[in-house]
Image (cartoon, rainbow, N blue to C red; front, side, top):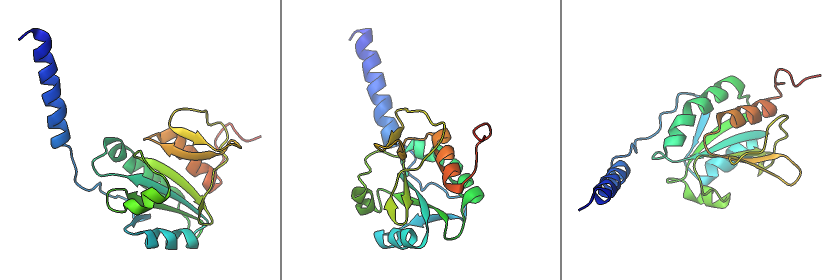
Length: 168
């Protein structure tokens, strides 16, 4: 066999081994202020009892989900407010009917709800990029991927926090 074949086989074996031995243990939650949703009814109850809800659709096997989990927990610790702003996590492998209901096909996906329905969020200064989808009227609709800056900006907007340099 030639060198190219050996390189290709080594790469293929590496990718297969990586998939087989990926960390699939549950992502630890470090905040007591993040709701772990176990059913559609639990999410519906949270959405009906809280004005704004930030939902993280994730999977345990997803490396970007693992990377953004501590940031999500920090935001929950800092900004959650009873009845006003809540943070929830939905494991798409365990509660797949909820992911299907909202058309989630990539992990992590962050969605924003107001009064029980998905609603865009007005965020000053956020630039268009691959991870951020906007509504037709320029509101942040979803964040797909572990985009720390975009997630922080949306949560701060929901919490009513002015970013330095953006106020008059």
